[in-house]
Image 1 (cartoon, helix red, strand yellow):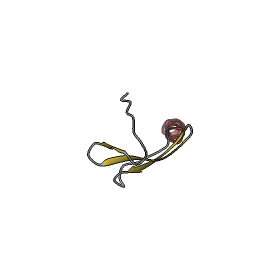
Image 2 (image 1 turned 60 degrees about the horizontal axis):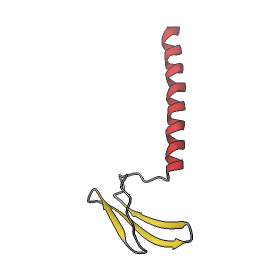
Image 3 (image 1 turned 180 degrees about the vertical axis):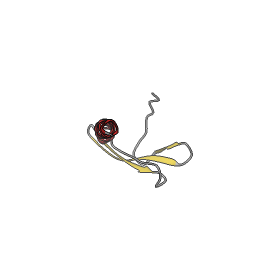
Length: 73
């Protein structure tokens, strides 16, 4: 992990096309802005983890149903 110090209105550039800007600092909270191409999904980590979990569950469910249908033939 790379740890960097930034002040309000300072930014980071990732991969030449993603910009992370520090918008506001209040106590222990930091508000950031993300500028990225539309094809690059940006999620809060807890949302990303939930999406991955639901995708895995759906895939397992669909796979079991497909196998069940396959063996019925």
